[in-house]
Image (cartoon, rainbow over all chains, first blue to last red; front, side, top):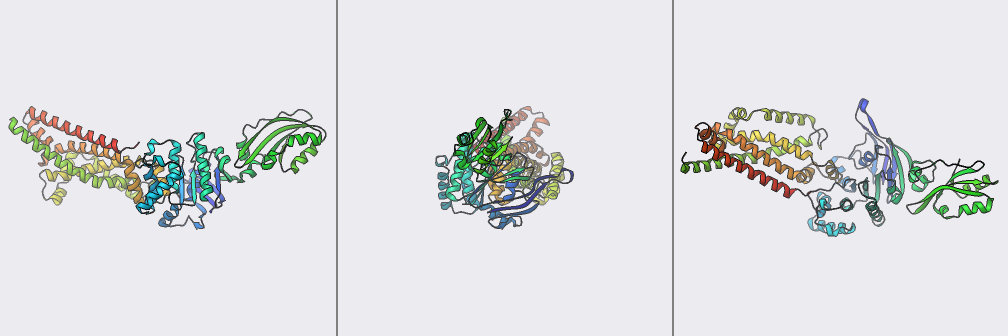
Length: 325
Length: 218
């Protein structure tokens, strides 16, 4: 649906050159929620702006629905942009227009007739659950409400792609969750493909199907959330399970960090170890998180006994990833 | 001056001032606002970067603004004759007044338009707006209250300039104050015109503030 290939973006010239994007390649499939995470200054904003050509890539190819974006004429580009919605960190609503007029804006641009337009605006405000604010001005709304208007506006012309530029970064945690739920629901009910960039792991954890980690303009990791979490030492794993303290393992014991994904998280592994291999198992630390529809956990244990190597093989055979200290 | 003469003279002078300033304001907005818009969009980071045009307009605007009004008044006499047919009278004064206020207002409009959040322009671009649509549906509506205050400021400056229009027989309150109050030591005329001028300026500022406040939806 969105195919980004070997995209580079260079700002400035000569000594002051900055490679905001350095050979980025990724594909967003139809109907998925794809997240790009990374620290600020990683090039995330530049990347999402390249998709609708708010920034022109220095080189490389960007195809949206099979259309090469980098070579479009201005007029073709405007048409192509009308088929993509975009939401922003600071909402970017027109302060001089009411909620209804803001949502109507892209419809005016696309040349809708007034009766059709009014009907569509009502529909959209129902969709984002904001019908009672139809004639309010943005200044009278809370952050979450403003973002709902932003979403309604982005979806007005029935695009099949939504670009989300740090859409929840200016919101409090609770509002963030309600906006994420709305996005997830829109993804499911409308089959909306969402490409989002964020620096909040919470967003990734809540709604992303696949993730790319961007740092210094390069993609470091790319895959489904489960794959990346299960990769010991990955940026995603480290970010979702922070405060990795050094384990103090007793002499003679074997320390191991076990990563669980999906079904494995529901198995009574510790009990099995104790029973099958006659080990003393001592839990040193751990956490379990819900990621998307999965439970993902990390457990740090030390094992004391004669059959520790068999125990480790057993765990590996269960499909768990291990890090032995 | 006798009161029975002073009142009609004051009234006539006030009408002349309003006539000169009113028309000059209209021409100033008609020409100054597009200039301000051009200055914003042709900027190197603007919607349609045209650095050469931007520099050229900027330089002309600066040159026009650095001329003292009294000099400009004389300099444009041939142009005034070309446009109006005469160089004397209130109608003729509209030409130099407009020429002085257009670059002034262009800069004010430029500043107002630049204050529009870049994010709004980006959002409009992401929706597929043309440059024209961005100007008329985003830039102007979003800066309208600031533009209105700019117009009030321009009108008040024009009233100040119009005092000098007496030099070419334009009439008006300023002219009356100079001729009677200053040159003939008729202090009461001076006081009356000054009070009238203060009142007019106050009313314009008040109207400007009110309108701007009503238009701001923040």
